[in-house]
Length: 318
Length: 318
Image 1 (cartoon, rainbow over the protein chains, first blue to last red):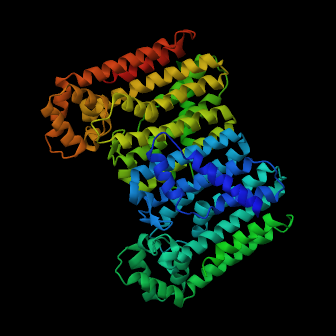
Image 2 (cartoon, rainbow over the protein chains, first blue to last red):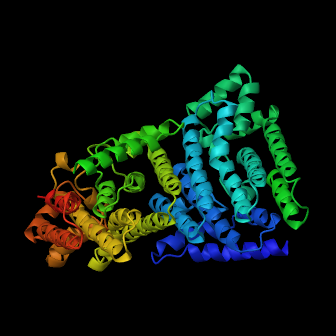
Image 3 (cartoon, chains in turn purple, red):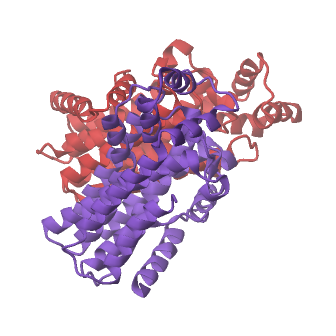
């Protein structure tokens, strides 16, 4: 764990260093979101995956920073797209600096990630992360297309979360395996681990958006509801609900005709139908699936860290 | 010229092909802006530069498409950032599809460009275009920082336009030279050609924003004025103006207190002080500088095409 701790510290230093620019607003905006206390779970995955595979070099630290830069860029853009006011417990970058700065600093961080990858010199890593970036964008646009549509299927929802969230987790772990020179089947196992963990992560995120204590969440509770995002808790409550309840969901999520009491009603309906409980239950299954994928790898601190990450993703919901 | 025409046709086909996605809104938004009749000047530069250097392969076509994708992504983001309603003579993507789709499809095109570069396989090209992308973002943020500030210097303005515009022109020509395997000094000459041409291009763009006939422009005349962008025509008119005129510029550009007659007054002041004429004159100098940089290269259709591009950039303003 000390090794991972040192690697993560080096990664954090690199993140701070590579977000610098002579154009002062860039590090200002970047620092605002980066320093706000993100969990750094994605770079941790890259680092732990590399070390799990016996990697002894230091390339994984820079590449972990790239993964975090891509993640940060997507957060900046997401908060503009979703008009979010709160992120990581403080004003979102777009609330504080405006949409313009947020779009552009997101573009900078994205570009900077590719510069760091180019300096590292692996076309394979570039392939993995450029593919992930395209898939993230596709997932986000797919989410946009399914917004406000209660006819969205669970399959479409899964496609959204695999794209917008899980793909980067999968890429993070795969990059760790690649720099360590793992054979293809083990690269795939770690990629699949990341993908399953990422799906679990988003399922919990979607449940917490309704059930979390505002203090704990860091984002505004109920943002998904206000935007009419169709997530698993909604899909389950809708499917299990009466005609009258479905009319409620249509009014609030399709027509976006929402009053003050509606969020509380949404939460009550989800509780009634076990929608949140089952969403967390599914997340637990995906996390277990992920942990099972670690089986072929050597036991030790790195494997425990990866399994603990999978547990954390789900347990943070309880 | 037939060769360039065939290459450009191949490039257009590749652009259309690589903008496809199973997520239907993506090609919808991308097609809207791509098909709107952009000049394709940047991919032309890549293609012509490669052919000028005697390149006989076809890699330059895909890389020219990458340059156009990066350009298109920046246009999509710029129009969100600037809240522009018109682009290439039709509704901007953000006006038609919304800011969300525009930010995300921009992200997709950017990622797709990197995927295409990775498939091409050159770390040098990836370095050039990832560096250019970071520089573009820095130029755009610097522009944001100097907005609404009449104390902006000509040096700062030049730094903005070198970053936000000229850097991609420079990268476009440099990539052409690189795929052709040119020695470093000739790569640099073509890079410098692109940089000078890019500065000329933006100077003319900034003049046209005030002086153009709305029909001809494709973008809304006076957008820069409405946003308080500090461009060379403004800097010259401000510097040459009386105290009363400076008070006008401060009211309209710093306070952004604008009435219906102000755009016409701005244009009149610029005309009075020769601000537009001198901006075009400077563009002509940069274009001449660019053409001079072609001197060491073999005469022929490719050289004539590049010189013609430099002339076009300026003459479109007359």
